[in-house]
Length: 191
Image (cartoon, rainbow, N blue to C red; front, side):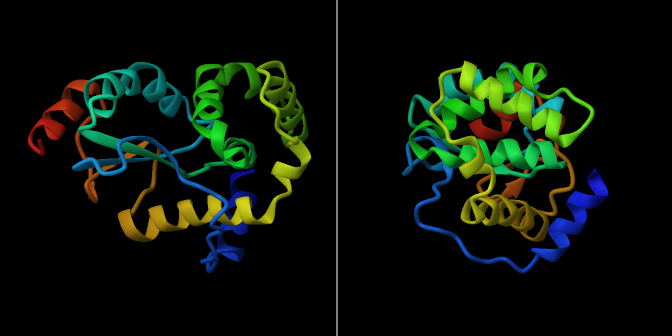
């Protein structure tokens, strides 16, 4: 499945179209001095751990206080993550809520032996969570697909992203072990 996904990336590697209707998933003060970018894949267990164990502290100490904003960027590692990214990106006013729900309940929808089975689990999960998303329209939306692929392409070209989650703080790749203590040390130097 990863080989197929890499072929898709190579085929669409020159996509540079960004639709104004597709909006970045951001939390925090857009004018904040610190910008944290997180490249992540929705099927990545380490990304789910980041959302459950590190993001809440970042939110409380830096995002909710206006010191930082965080941008969630797509870096799908497989077709299931690619489709989940399209679902998260599909409803701008609920994107952050959908993203958090997908990570909080990752084991509930990331199961199955085929992409079709995983898609069916994803569709059922989204419906059960009460998100009013037209699953087929989102999965087949070319503009959203291009947007998600562009996030991945930009991550590779601009920041040499090769694993998830990858953290970028004010345009610099965070190279230390990813835990809240190390992130806090780096962020405190920027305040």
